[in-house]
Image (tube, rainbow, N blue to C red):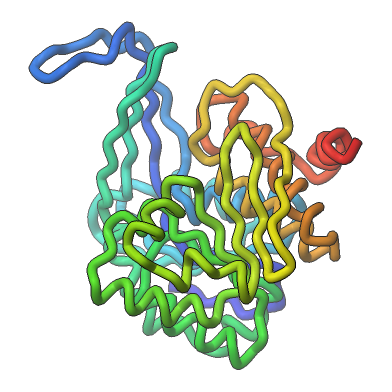
Length: 306
């Protein structure tokens, strides 16, 4: 692993994933089959999507993750974008997502692959890495790793954004306690409606009432997002566009939110800019296919402001 310690805007922790989208004529039921009309391969992963989106928006980005033996083209792509990589090479297959979609809906399958080894990065994280980042973003629930990261962030006073994603669905009792400890050091918690519902069902008060102390953002897809702080709740509309694929929209939102924060936008406008960034992703298949630069996003942001 190569350690990059120069000053950066954003340090991302999370996974990389290779996504396969199959367009099918119908969604089969159990013991049935269906014809696949097209197959498309895309780069994805909750951590990598946010890193790429942030880089497209002009941020200087570092990325901590693991990569399997089948990810050489992905690694080259990230390097060519100018993302500073801290990747641990692990023999095994990179995480894969399989999406089967027709005009009426989709089903998907997820193979974790080497992303289960992200926790092994814990010993690779040192104070110098954290000190050189203005903002730290945590994707998914790599809780052992993140316990160490947030403690270093507290000492360095980094701005920390945490999006646990579907990991909240899989938390054990022990994991819930780890999550509670991590949330003490997080500035912004981002969850979607289903994830927030699960937090309520699990009685994760630290997550459900996070906005009482800091900033809780509940994303709602085409319905925008709710921002909850100790001052109250504000709804921020989404940018209206034709959506063909929602995968990766949340990751782009996070990148847009962080980019706006680092440019000193107020909280509502940070969320609005996140919504504008996400609107590009949903217009095409592939989480990174339609990511765009700052000026293009600002155009949609300005329209949302009117």
